[in-house]
Amino acid sequence: MSTAVTITAPSVKHILLDSLVVMKIVKHVDSELHAGISEVSGDACAGVLTGLVFLDNSRLEITNCFPTVRNEPVIDDDANAAQQYEEQKQQEMLDMLRKFRTMNIDYEIVGFYQSHQFGAGFSHDLVESMFDYQAMGPENVVLIYDPIKTRQGQLSLRAWRLSTAALDLASKNDWRPELVKAAGLTYQNMFEELPIIIKSSYLNNVLMSELALSKSYSSDKYSTRHFDLGSKKSLEKSVRAMMANVDELNKSIQSLTKYTIDKQRHDNMVFSLTQKRQQENESRQARGDPILPMDDIKRIKAPQLQTRNGLLDELLASFDTNALADFSKTVTSENITKLFIAEAVAEEKVAGTKDRTMSSVSSTR
Image (cartoon, rainbow, N blue to C red; front, side, top):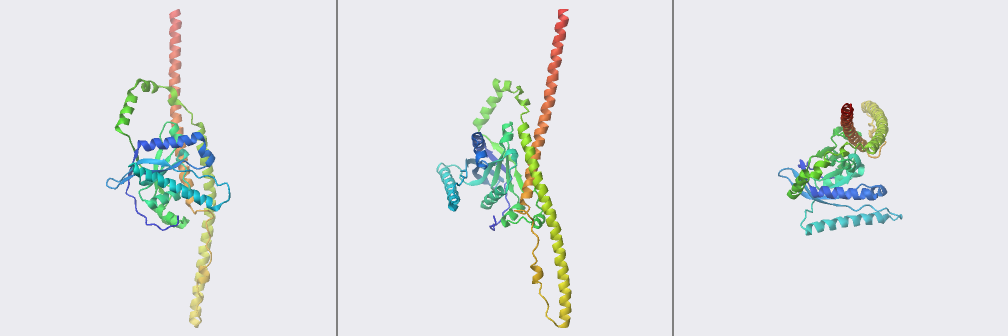
């Protein structure tokens, strides 16, 4: 990720997503989750997006997609096994794009998709993939699909891309606190979200209209499944992930505080040594002696932040924590609303039962 690239500001403002892409993503992720492949391999479901870019109206149209091959575990310690498998993976992707071109399907790569629970799965590898795709084309994006929220009845697909400042730091592969502060980068402006418009065919719209007008749909509309509060496990899992991220952030804050103190001490020491050397050189120059160089002072090693990727991990952990908090807040507010509605319905049923009982007693008398 340290390759120097020319950073071009993207011009796409919104995304037009074909309904075929939505169905293929949902089917791919649900099939792997049902088979337990994601838990065994530890990788997220991923795939490549193809489509077209319309610069006239600043629109990115995603028309098709296909899943990528998963990384197979290397049993032996052969160093060439992983490289051979990566080459095989690239060859299979090129073959699929070649088939798209033969079948007159849009074969231009416009991004990729991944599935992450609660919409919070931004990692260092994902940032590297986003940088590679945006270096290949500035209009490329990543679609994050949330299977947990989708199973609760709300389709969750969000489009993201790296901001210009984050793309600049990613090209240098340097996330030091000084550079991050100079770029004005925070977890809030590190990624840019694009609005998504799902496009359906006319036949699909007619089918949905017929389903909406059918009796089966109308009767199901008043069922009690909408009052289901089956989000306890997902809410507990999101809170646990949030707690883990907060613990990591606390450790990072301690490391950053130590780095700030050491950096300030180092700067003060270098400044004092430089002042002393300048005064000494002035006195030596007045006596006609040769001046002393500043090289030994410049060679004093500056302190390093005790993290693997500078502030990148802290920014990603903050972004994930914010996404988990939004999910927990949404689920909690929905559950509270359902509880109030269920309580009102139960009270109405109890009141109706008492009225019928009183009327039956009075008629008996």
